[in-house]
Length: 499
Ligand SMILES: [Zn+2]
Image 1 (cartoon, rainbow, N blue to C red):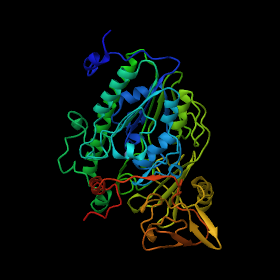
Image 2 (tube, rainbow, N blue to C red; image 1 turned 120 degrees about the vertical axis):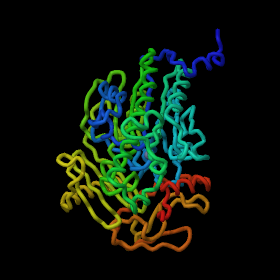
Image 3 (cartoon, helix red, strand yellow; image 1 turned 30 degrees about the vertical axis):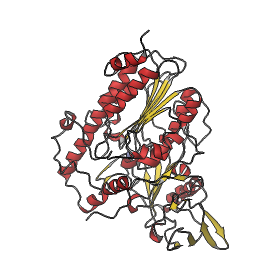
Image 4 (cartoon, rainbow, N blue to C red; image 1 turned 45 degrees about the vertical axis):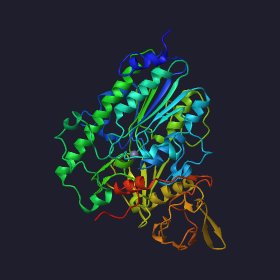
């Protein structure tokens, strides 16, 4: 008998087979590729061959068209994937909010059901501090909350190698649930050699320097420069696709059944609305994500019913045969009913809400009250919005109940509920001043105390608020000063515009 510690070095870097699995209990592998918009995958009709491995997976499984993320930025979107709740319910919608300890994560349910669970993540916004590690027997966030991960991101190769190692080490007996979060497609688009010249020349150092969204608001890229940035983005996809191919191959080469789910937390804008990046709008390029589901018993199909990352927790739980009575998600392997999909953001001084049905979407800009309706059947790229008030009213009426109860009327004055505090730190509502209260309708007036606690009193018709305040049990996390400074420099936090 050779001990595992002797075998381990031999297995590393060795493509040997994984331990035999259990046909009755397949592994489940959830892969989230940060910032990957659906229409840049060849599986979704892109003209560059960015994703031969994912294309193969798509041909063998379910490919959902028009699938939606729940948020245009990383933290709330991933929390939705693993809790099956909208951001307005899990409430992890700001940099300093962690998941409340009583909100279940799907990996906990699988762990309790005997799965070996492991998470490998590559950005601070999916790190343990926010609660993502709960329920994972193994969780590697590579210390990214503590050091300069954005300048030196964790590469997909590291994630794949660690996932393979874990499967070899712990794959005997219990089935695996693996969650792999990949950052290599995310800005600043730095695919390694030789991928960095697959579609275009290698970028210059200046082109590879990260600037914030605000920076590019003031200095829009030329069409030629944008074309180059898009090529680099596509090269990142090809690089990631190749690594996922190697991961998938390890399962295919072994006698080990698995479900595969590949998706993204949000997309990326490339000038469609005059800006670049993500987080500040809710248009299709920011929210339409790939969604591929393959595995035992799944027959290949292109699915046009609207689905989204809100369905992942329910789908994963069903694959594992465990109960999941949380949230509106459904098992994507079965029938998908007509539903509405909400999204919201207040990043970079935006304040937007969205509700999408199968064929329409309402975009609400809370900063000016503008309502735009898109017909997703005739205008899937959302280029020809309409201000039709009857349609907007109908969609808006569906939206508010989904956002929950926000205000309680008290003798004609409407008082906020649910401002969350941890000591003196605000951990709940995003209140940075009266103009940023995110109230709808936008002509309602808001008064705030000058110092914490910023208790806001609103004298207005009872109306919805941009945010649901969430459970009072939410706990705050504190970002280290240097991490905060770095995130601000990169434009993630609500920093002042770059001059
Ligand atoms: Zn992201």
